[in-house]
Length: 377
Image 1 (cartoon, rainbow, N blue to C red):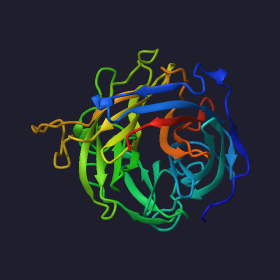
Image 2 (cartoon, one colour):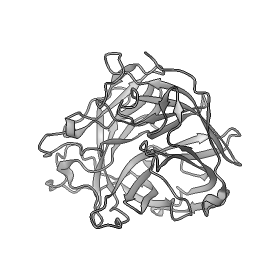
Image 3 (cartoon, one colour):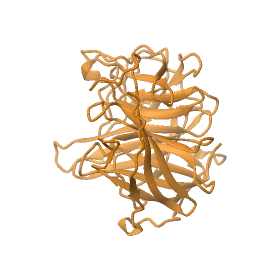
Image 4 (cartoon, rainbow, N blue to C red):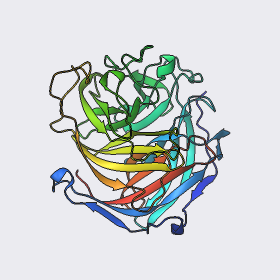
């Protein structure tokens, strides 16, 4: 029942730097993000590794990587697949990411673990949509985005190393989907982001606004995505904030082509600062991947505000400042949705991003690494 078989194949090799215009060692610094010179960010590019779509691990196609995390004491990397138990039961992977101060060298899949529902069984097809994963002192945290069209609510749960259910956090009012779309999550825009703050609280973020809070992002307007701050012990929400998702950065080539922008991941820097990842897409153009520093200090707690569009109260969103645009620095990013800090084999501080290939033959699972030269701690 618990799928913990060992993967045997080395899945990826470092791409030649000629594949993009960015050289190993290229540096990028934001000295005073949000005009705060005590919180500089400085990164140095370490390289890129890709895993082609179609690789088979433990008898199942590898892909859909939507969350990534690293545990320092065990030096363990885990990644979650957003397969909705369709290709195989919902699962997460243990990875061996070989990175040091000289570069990102290879990625191997070590083990596959099946996530189990509250009944101790694997999730049935289309009953779950795994999106984010983090280590915590109580076990492995992970989110499901739910399925608004099917009336399935999102959730945040803790699982053991063996994939077994431990407990679930309490979903605040207003997040459950509704048939008439009067309130609740938008489909595919729910619990995408997850991080553990330095003080121990757990933060979960939506990719776009709840229906009662306004529209999803467009080419001319952004979207007000709620962030929920949970108490790790009680499992209850203690605050909610507003994150201002940016407008869609590029229009599609065709007037009726698909485009969007959302926030699929964030990563705690301390107890109030985050790195937030925004992922835009325009059909026949590609992905726009940007990283922001975001500060929750001074942001309004909106947990008692039912609707951001109808409230008369003053609402202050989280502040943010762009620190990196992957395309602008010379990379060709795929559908990046995952992000973690880690330590290289030589002790180098690193930031690693990973993409969701959507199990699409025209995409790859992409890992991008930077050495972290400076960051708030």
